[in-house]
Image 1 (cartoon, rainbow, N blue to C red):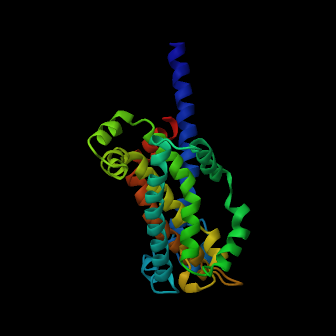
Image 2: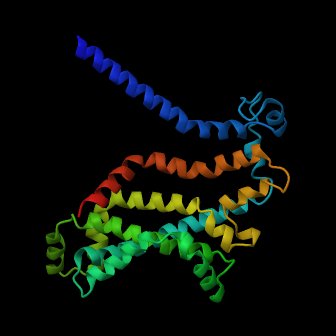
Image 3: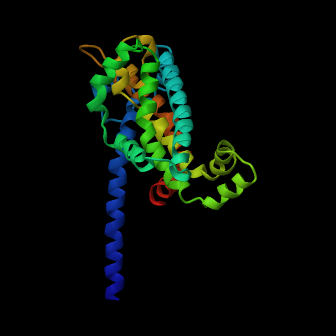
Length: 279
């Protein structure tokens, strides 16, 4: 009886802590959504934490009519799609030889790739700025695409190589005996077996690219080339901030990646575990 009561108390405490943690985690999102359905007058009169008197759904239509929000959204979409496509293609081509092929200096080259995981963007932003300027790419859409491809490649190769190492090498040997090339092995044998880590890679790369703030802020001065994270500053002036519009823009910009993450949550978790642990 004592054990049952003690177990019940422990479970109650665990559930209480989990519920409090969940409320603390979700409260900022609820605050942003609540703010997006208000007006500035309501915020000034009732305070930022009060619930809306009336749900102003027109904010979600107005956001597309003011400023360059449509342009920012289009730029973010273009950059994200191109970066994800190139990262997936290059990481597959890079991970395959590290996993299945033998060549001189293979270990050293792989260590160089892993070294890229330890280099923060803050450390290379100044030389990156100077290099892009000398190549004439500064203040172009490619100044957002190329660096983000390079920054995502090390983790992508590490993730896919870890999963590829668990695929039986005999499959490739049999295919080679039948006359298959390395390109066909990658496309017809390896890629169909990489669904979970590929989904993880695509989602992580898309979220990171979509939410990147530092690169567009430093490398882009043309307003027509800015992306959503920087474009939110349109609703902020020197002396005032339009909080409802900022919150509405934040909700609209976060919605695509949130839906993608929720839809592929199981694949993301399984892909990361498999790709990171199977060596």
